Image (cartoon, rainbow, N blue to C red; front, side, top):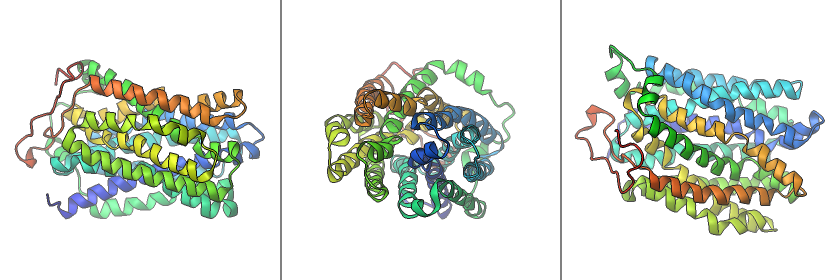
Length: 418
């Protein structure tokens, strides 16, 4: 199916927005050790910054999502990108751990808004049959940002230090110039902008409480899956294996390439075999990979294990943008997917601190702590996804042609009211 120039611009802007948001977030995970040394504290204390960033993301999803439902996806997305870029820059000037924690909390609010607004703009603008592959591409922005942070860490960290790393985080603000010039507003939002009555998010959540609760639980497991395999992996390589900055950077680049491949592969596959089946298959791939990923000893073996693990993790995640947007109530589509996603993040926000604590209690055995979380949630995700429904191909825009019959499969426990 042929895309228009405007649809391509929307897709590119949303992908880059999530890429650069993730880039700014993942700069933090590479410098936990440096920050702990600078402020004379333990790594476990510094990981609270990651916890706070994740915990505040639901607030951002709610604030920016509601603004986007009311004023449009495009202007809110631009404001969101400028805000998280400036807060990352400010993090480089923190004079104490407390100040850094406050700035990373505010960064979490800004970060929490981008995904929901960007994914709604994309899924409402592209042809229905393209949602699967675009879902994978959009979610691949997350490991793309991680990969970009890995490259910056490997090339510049030893020269500019952890403060310089954060200062580079202001660069994403330049994306706003591209959006302002090339990206149109969502056609779905334009058609409904003059609606006389807009339901409150509280009213929608009350009406769709079963669906919301299910999605929040599902996204909690998903966020344990991603953050449980990513956030402390550089620390695992630096502290437990004592690899050099260069080696850690190369391994991080390797597993993020795997993540990008996994997201696009399973996002595309979900268009053929269904969202739920694609997610379950991707998640379960993690189980046989665990020993190589967490317990291998050499850098090559660990890189291979990490590559395969992120094919699994981001393969499952690659289906999520399409799945959540298709399942969401249309009148609050900029708010609902991002909110349930980020509430899942809130419930999983203590992951890094929990894993660091477990590792510390077992002689800095980060591999054991990460494997415990990853193996558990891979199974949980495969079970939860089988209990839900899917609306693959559901109509989002009246201008796209005839609606495609929602694919509900065998699961009948969730979403029956829609």
